[in-house]
Image (tube, rainbow, N blue to C red; front, side):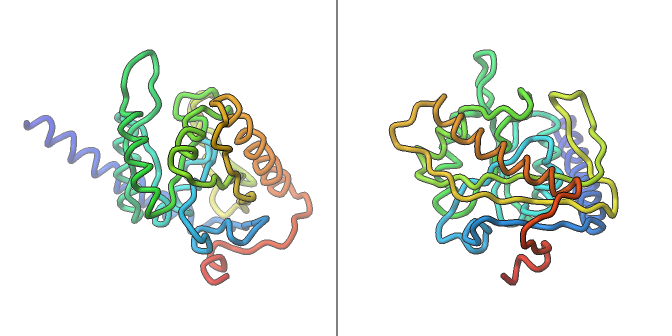
Length: 236
């Protein structure tokens, strides 16, 4: 009991520090957003949607959308800290991940929870998951979209200057303070009712590759279409 209490206290403290760091760093960034369809913006959606992004861009996703989108966070020690940080940023995560090696890590329960939560609010998923392969869409989002009857909004995120933490397949990108960052929201993707897992993943993969490629081009200086800042987004 004493160890559990110490662990919870440590996790909560680490979550506070992480959330504070995300807020401080995020406040220095110059974030520009591009939306193909204004109804892709969370506050403009007529109904809840699933927002998909790459795992390496978790920090920027957390800063930008934690209070509006309910994220799926893995059941792990690092996930405990991330979940605590999301709560301090104003969000409420769902815990779980896909099954690996035959071990149940809360994937089935998380799917049920996300379907229930998706009737009321937007969901957020790192579609390549915490263990990769990097930038390869897993089958989970297609299953969730079909069973929950929710559209998927692909989100490309790219900081102009960043540092990668961790090995390549588990990397988290940390934007450098005061750099310009780009977020590209694609049009809603609807997964056909009869689509198989591989087909669903391919549909989302193409959409994710498109928005991520565009975000990275804009971050590298390519001419971008009409954009708006994060602060302006709330008033559009």
